[in-house]
Amino acid sequence: MALPPGYTIHPGVPAVETYLHLRTSTGLTPPSAAQAAVSVHGAWYGCHIVYAPENQTSSEIVAMGRIIGDGGWYFVITDMAVSKDHQRKGLGDAVLKHLLHKIKSTAPVEDGFPPYINLLADPPGRKLYERNGFVYTAPRSLGMVYKGDF
Image (cartoon, rainbow, N blue to C red; front, side, top):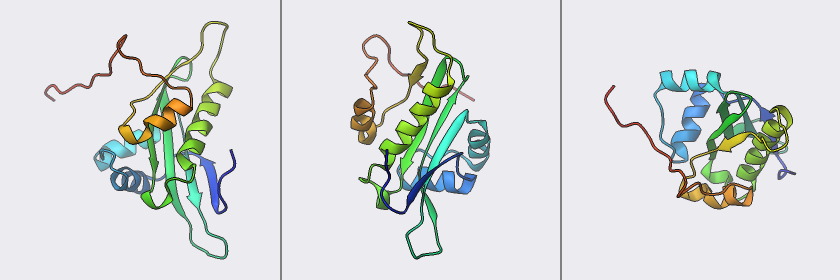
C-alpha cells in the first residue's frame, strides 16, 4: 500500500517514550514506564510510520502497531495507534496490512491450519479491522480481562 508523501513505514517498535506518547495521545490505556519497556522489547514484531515533510529536517513517529505471540500459531495484533493529526490518511490501514503481511510471510502454514490472528477492537478501529478480514468471535467466544488482586 502506498503511503501519502512524507510518510515511510519501518520495521521495529518505537522507543519507550514515543510508545507511551502514542498510546496516551490516542486514548489508549497507558502502561507504566517499566511495563512499556518490557512490552516494547518483548514484541514478536512491530512497525511504525515516520512523517518527515519534504524540505524540513525534522521527523516524527506518528503511527505504530505490534504483534505479540509465539511465532508459530498464535498472534495478537496490539498497540495500533495513529496520532490524531495524522488520522484519516490510511496510516492505520498501512500498519495493519504490514503486520498481517509479516505474519503471512513468516508463520508456518499447512492446509487447513492457518495461524490464529486476533485482536481486541476498540470502537474507532472496528471498521478498519473488518475491512481487513477480521470478524467478531461472539457468541462462540468473548474476550475477558483479569481484574483480580495482585
